[in-house]
Image (cartoon, rainbow, N blue to C red; front, side, top):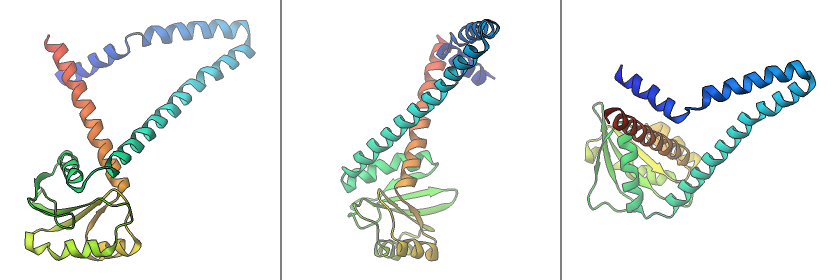
Length: 204
């Protein structure tokens, strides 16, 4: 109940002028309709284009953010990429352990969730990931007593790699999946910051 109150309170603080603005727009639109129907529909069309323009601008900003994220990832080292993945998996509900002394071709993370233990290979690459990389990691799965193998890359996988993954039940995460994980992580961070601000204001 308290959470609903704080959410409503946050919305009121964010758009305090919205009810008044809607009332004023409605009032003048009614007056305009009575004065000149043609002008009314012209203005109505212009007002209708505002949300579409805003949506287009919003999508452009999202695309720019994704492009920026992709460029930042491409500029990372393998060690940085591994550290970058850790909180992304944690946001998905995994407990994450970083493997010590692992090279760029080995197992980098061990993740656990609901009784499933998986080894993660972080493949930072400028080219499509080949099936050989999957075979190398799948070979050591029993060594770690893992149930699953997860391969994450900033690029794509070849067709052969996809076929090998399907046959061996390996989870592949390409740059599209990685981007989705980043978006979920950023969204949750923003929501938590918003909730913290509302709670602080409520307690004060």
